Amino acid sequence: MQRTAPDPRPEPAPEPPGLPVLPELADRLAAAAGRAEPEPPGGSGELRTAAAGYAERRGPAADPDRLLVGPGAPALLLALYAAVGGAVVLPRPCAAWYAPPARLLGRAVHLAPVPAESGGAPDPFAFLETVRRARMEGAEPGVLVLSVADDPTGTCPPPELLHEVCEAAVGEGMWVVSDETRRDLLHDPHDTVVVSPAEMLPADVVVLTDLRATLLPASWPVGVVRFPAGERGAALRAVALGALTAASTPLPGPFADAAGYALGEPAAVRARTAAAARLHGTLAAALYRTLTAAGALCRPPHSGSHLYADLEPLRRHLSAAGVTGAAALERELAPWAARGGHRFGDDPGALRVRLSTDALLGPDADARRSVLDAPDPLRTAPVAEALTGLDRALTALTTGG
Image (cartoon, rainbow, N blue to C red; front, side, top):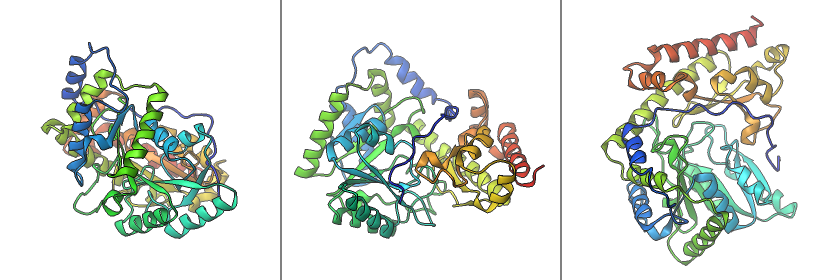
């Protein structure tokens, strides 16, 4: 068992900027630019009411007093870790931002492998073994973080797996944090079933959402966390709010105004979210075809803007090219926003890498807008050139060409 994910260095180039800013959101932010005061810690009543409406449209009713809104999901996760206490259990691989807040608090991070079928949630038996070994080492796990629409794998764990692993976590006396950031970016909503663990075990699950994946641009950090009803959930919220207040990182007022507008999901925002899901689905499928044609293993992506490729079947050829681990693979595939598996808690020696559909969109806002608006994104110059370049790079690495 790998106890903690390694601290990756050096850092790669920044993530691609993603889709252009929705004009209606830009106008809203500009209109609020004169607002000097920040949001109160946890969000104003008005902002939490908007967040409650957003949450209720995806599941059971959510009282605004059960929510917190803050400057991005990582900051909210830090507050949650501080409130829960104990060690943290994460899937392997998992989103790169799950582990660092725990390290900042000095908490042990234990990684439980995901099953072959999907990422996002650990295999239930592997999870229980991870908890057992953690306790043998003197740690007491307090929280399991999982995702219903996973970064880095772009997959959605089936509801029955989620239910089994959540029941196991609750049986071990742990909280479950369900990251639902990408649940609105299903590539085919009619083919993929997403059920929140909060609907399965409502008293024990905290729901966390980063609005940057769907409603807001990538550089506008706003997140929402929803706590269970009842005294236990209220107590956890109170401690998390105290931690968020102590961190003194308020949500800027203009961002709060824009977020409140987006959370109401007017027609323009709904249309952009649907268009983004379709586009990412098209591009992820093209990436999948390119990678598997080269001999890589890859779970078929179902959500979001990433997919996770395993090039272990090509190790002999890659070793001949000097590529023997995740960091080297990341460097070779850097033009496609590659991130080695070591950044997601995976084995640094394994030839696994996450690729991003955002890297296919082009170098500037005009190019990205043209891809978004195109009837067939695969025929646009930025996408076609990026996919051709990836195919050539993989061919060169695996054939010595």
